[in-house]
Image (cartoon, rainbow, N blue to C red):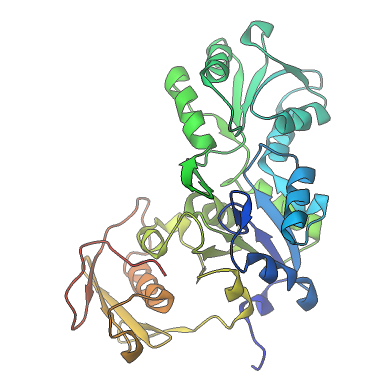
Length: 346
């Protein structure tokens, strides 16, 4: 139908921030313009972030500085989810050791908990969130408290975080350090758990939201866990290659080069005699090998996003259920084969 775009099927976008809207302090090219177009077509917007180092108000202010539409209540953070989890499990006035930012401490205090500074205060629980200045002494204090009997909640377990200079360790890397000292995993409040997405959709009054993110293990897995449609954008952590190899629970419904893809028709993926086609690119799977037939416009062997979509469709149909990542070999018909498991990023 004329004017049909991907967003015609959805009433809201639940967008991740790092790797989708910005990398470090700078906006990803085209992202702000795309977000600004949503209101004009009647699609609501919320930001669902695992970053617990800043308050939603600060995040919203940063977004507005970048030119993005953002009211304070449009930002739903893992710090809020962590504080809500504490409120579910502990009575008001419980002592909580906060290993993280002042913003996380404010969320904990907002649900009636007493923030303490040391394991010697005998905290009932430890909540750990990202803070770029965290050092060994804070992580050690968390371990002392947890080994002393305190419960342990992590706002999120993202192993990495995209920054302007590249990829840096995320909260999950710091959580792993504490895990090494205490011998067990924390409860996780944010992505990839479903409640964060349900909270965001409820705030908007959305019935058919689309989760948009750059990470398979948090954004896409979390959206899938929440029973929502998911779209992977190739502007942050994950790529066509990692999407192709993904375990079933982390496979996105849509793959987009960037946020502008929301406003374009999503190309139909068809199948005939086991060959999957998308935008003129074709792929099929036999055994552990995917064969790709590129269109005349791709004679140089570059694998664009449509070829990646066709490859994912073929491989995911061949391996519909897997609890671990896969590693198919990839051959381009009529061209020199590429090394196993490689897909060029779009």
